[in-house]
Length: 219
Image (cartoon, rainbow, N blue to C red):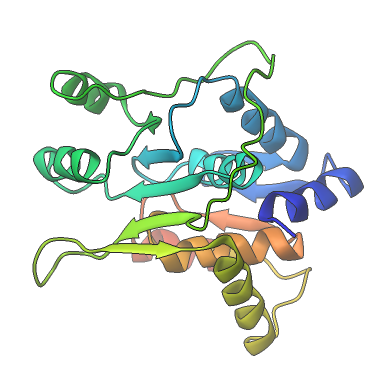
């Protein structure tokens, strides 16, 4: 079973139930699915979908979209200097990039890459890719010892790790899951996966700091 299929089960049962909360907005299952369909309007090139940016709802949306389209989600650290980001895109031939306008302008000067846009019309033009794709998530180490090293993970591994954590920590469907780290981290994505599998409410922080974290716990 794919991650998107777990999401669809919750969507069908409770479309208007709140699924994801950030500091400024709440999103129902139906709203998240509309965003997935909206971004699916883009024309995709190759197997990668790349997101570069601070924590946002689009980390969740593109994660679900990759599962739906059988593509590889690549999460790059937006705090890295622009030259390193450009080097990672070139070396791994990354494409279908979702990022800020500022970064998009910079990258377009030297890269022939495809960039994703948020479309207003909801007319699906992308079909599911039936080709085998063993790598579901491509992320990178911090690079503290040298250059950031790639970490490639299959969709089955993401699901297995999420289930293992659910069982180990006895997480239940009614529990809220708070993500307090950058969403490009594999641990944050594991918590994201746990919430999708359980149909639990997920809260994420747009700005990562201890004060905001404690406020969320208290709330």
